[in-house]
Image (cartoon, rainbow, N blue to C red):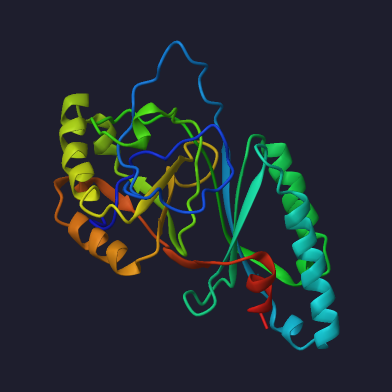
Length: 272
């Protein structure tokens, strides 16, 4: 049983999936905690979340530069086509040098599995798609968290069915499983353990958590993604969370993907 890393809490929410330029001035980036739903407002529609990690075949790198440029342009065009404000969003990351088994990541957020399926199909039917494998792919959905705390910041007035990606340079992504004994604990005990977990998380306000739920739709139970401009803060957060009591209920929290955010063409150019 692993005692590492983070038990997921909540995803920062918004009625839009348009990414913000970055953390709001004067407010922490962390989104631990949730606000009660206001029954006078319509519930936020749940989103489909997918992190796809791609590996380019060595044969592609040996192609002529002009041919590779055409392949990259076609791949980027599909990403651009599917960026529909308020409906479907994809954010691109490079993993060159941070993982040996993947080269890039596409984080997509939308409202229908069918749309995600069509978009990924179009990516894989591009010329570059013929040279790609997908060693890892995590599918999840957003929903409200059952764990809530009092907090006077921007999270208090929002629903919890949507993610609002920030503008941070780095993201750390991993699948997460809790032990079965965790689910047998009384609700009061789980809330007590989560309270300590949340307290530690709030000590690192420059790290923003996005939590999505994968029960029954993928192998993992949760998919978590931590955005930050300060990797050292995330390292310190993970180390601090090892000492929390709730870490005893972590079953598995790897592989972990350290990703660098960049525009699609820059990500593709780094493939070679």
